[in-house]
Length: 213
View: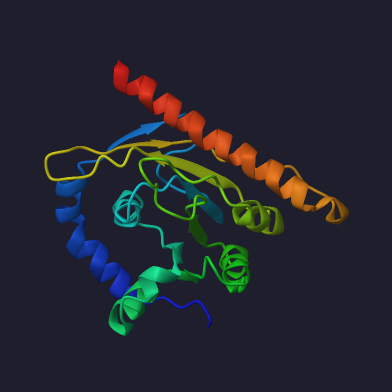
């Protein structure tokens, strides 16, 4: 299925949900270097984030209200009913079957990025189990190397709730070094994926240090 979204529905949701979402998340945003990367995302780019809960998606909708971010979303969300599936696609969600062999989402992501769009990826693919996050999957490296778009790492502490406050750290863009076609091996994809994972957790460490001050 071609990746489609409905700008009118997306705009309506952002407009009507902005104030309730701000009251719910009460986000405090930190920057690794605001002079290099603030909340204005480059075009095109990949927004890379850790995954703490299903609320990560609406958080980023309000943090980057002027940008349409096409997030990769797990198949389980689209199977909650036809109406909800239509709603997710209208918001720009890209279907990913984590247990299947279809990689349509890769081609869809590349098409969006080639047109100057933004793709949001939670490389862990799944929510933490028992508080333990999953390792990054190599699909983000594959997409990034194929499109040569910068990756903007973002880390959220997932501290969501009416009587809580979320904290977000926005990092500086990462551009992966060019790799020759013959060097695009499984080992190199995994090596680059681990590198991206390390950059994400460096943001986590930086955020924790800022919160101690």
